[in-house]
Image (tube, rainbow, N blue to C red; front, side, top):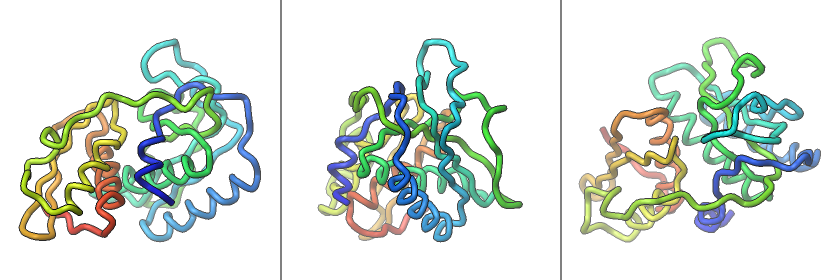
Length: 220
């Protein structure tokens, strides 16, 4: 996958067509999710034919016409919220590569209609709307390199990572992350408090590594 191209093309979509995900695409996505679940001790799954968004009044965050979602859960430890962002974003980018549209949904859904099914010791985090959008969405307001990175004189791989972070989605577009290069190969990430801010850090770390083109050692 050309991850940078997918990041540039992918935008949050809140209005969807009444069109089912083809069985072969669903099977491919489910196989990819199974691999990620095994690798990261998560329990994501694709749920089809269930509209958990249709009760909302018109306003920010409303999801309309979407009958599918990715259920995001994982082993309940201190890193789950961040890991949910990291793994969930990998699924989001995979969906984009398959011609599907998505939207992270942390609070704007009918929780009583969600099917809470996961292994013992795992915890539900949020859902991701997925399907065929009425359009491809529009770019959200972004930040500059200097607003996101505390380090300025940096190697190319780090700069490429930050450029990818600038394309990362964030809850209510808050984008509160701060990246800093520590030594030659360690990166520190911090964030101010905010809704799903820790999950946002996971999404940003995912973008950073994919943009940098290597696994990065993140420090405290």
